[in-house]
Length: 414
Image (tube, one colour):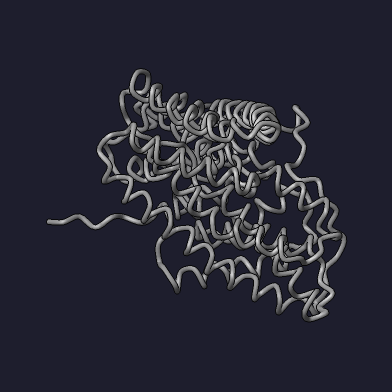
């Protein structure tokens, strides 16, 4: 009982700290990204300046503050939970916080979700190191931190618990149930206290049964696109890994990012600003040549720019890029169906389902994607089609390529 009491107390503390950190990072990123994107939209020269500046500052911080250690994302968590000796050091908290903020605010085409996850995991790991009684429960306390961070970021406690289970722990114990439920409860209470709003304010009222086959097709397409995203990240990271000078990586990476932003400003940062614009105008979209070219350009370039951002030193992962690609894919498909097949489907529904399908396929976690997207829009009308499509997209992705960005291990030459 004493052990469980101590675990309960530390879980509450982890929940509060992770929620506070996640909300702070989200609000700071939104604030500075909006300001800097507006500046760049008014003067194109900033599209050239911001990426190289952001990546250079990140490299400077890594060299002089963060022990010259590169951030490996969620793989760092797997290394820690899979070893008795490896720990997530305390400097990983500010490292991922500031590097994630700088990457997205200055135009890096990724999101803060993975930065939040690893920083939250580090909070749990540091707490585990403080008491001998916690040494056997490293994974559970790390998962408690992750679940709290995801809860605060997406306003979805169920998504927080499911992500910790589906992606990190993959098993449920009494300790896991205790620590994650307490940390998530505290995190959710904290965001309710702050009156945090859902990221996307949309009105979903209904969906039609005749659209179900189209939803399933969207799931297959999302699975294929997720494999393109995963392979892009793996391939481009391996190529950048062969470049010895970090200054060369920064120059090449920022040049590619800048040129892409000049062509498609929608690729700036997380891209949530572009998704919100699409949500508000989805019903009035007209299928023109320029619209198709823009949508196709986004679907083709986003995985490449995300990969380049991460490979050249940016901090982040595939959460936000997956949702971004899914929204554009869903809108493009709905527009094609309505124009050429008189399908009379609802574009907004396809965007939301596309976001969930891409996320599910990219991280192989359908239930996390389901509750996370429903939490993002604060609406469960599309629960059943999202569930079906998430399972289809994950299965498609696994059949085409069994790895995610997080589970892939490069082959070592013996």
